[in-house]
Image (cartoon, rainbow, N blue to C red; front, side):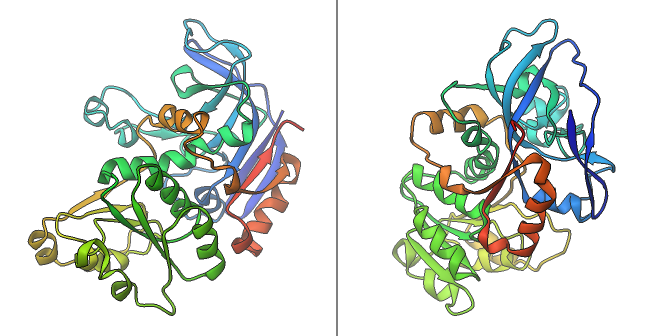
Length: 339
């Protein structure tokens, strides 16, 4: 076995690893395909406040069940699965309220516990979501990033009458566009980069705005009969955008925050109360992978174009270097552990 380990910030190694033992209620997954996320890059750079080093990273991965522990009946040896990286206690207030993604004792594969950038990994059986055998592992591994979009749009609400303004045309923005379009919403996306915006157009965005050349407030003013967007999603993680979002959002609008910055920002209580805005945070996913897998397997979501590069796991350092060197050329870079 091998594992991709961040030994400490800026030190990435591919090292041998002992076989993973499985306990009762767990399954052993032989990883086939895994995606590199922005949060993996943050751990690599030492910018994730929750990671403890050394850490096997990776939380977007799919594979084959090789063994099952005592009491497991939901999956069997040979099943193809995608792993939900969110491990919750099931007992705290958040879990009892159905908000398992913000469990008071939350653990996430690749962050709080060793993740899926390795040949084999033991996971709770409840976190192994079965997929059809004919679904490519590469596509199955996209279910987790798509679940982030599904979660924030579940938090804000989404429907065919909505006009969604999305800040940021990176991976998060593109997945939000895909899920929002699935519900029939109109999508406006703003970014600083023309190439990223062109890609967003290919993924279904109705309007693309380069905010270095176009005033976003001016461009969205006429949306929704002159009332502005009904939903605003911050996929850029820039705190200052919240103030703008409050000004732009329609009366009864909803604002979803995905950024994880501790930096403060100014927002107007008057704007929030006057328009009765709803501001929600969104973290990870609330057991939405089965829903996302259904969308993919039914053909309602076609996310394969998100994958821009694939590297053998042994060349992971080269994959990370590409993301660092030329981020504009990448959306979802995946590692192939089947080789």
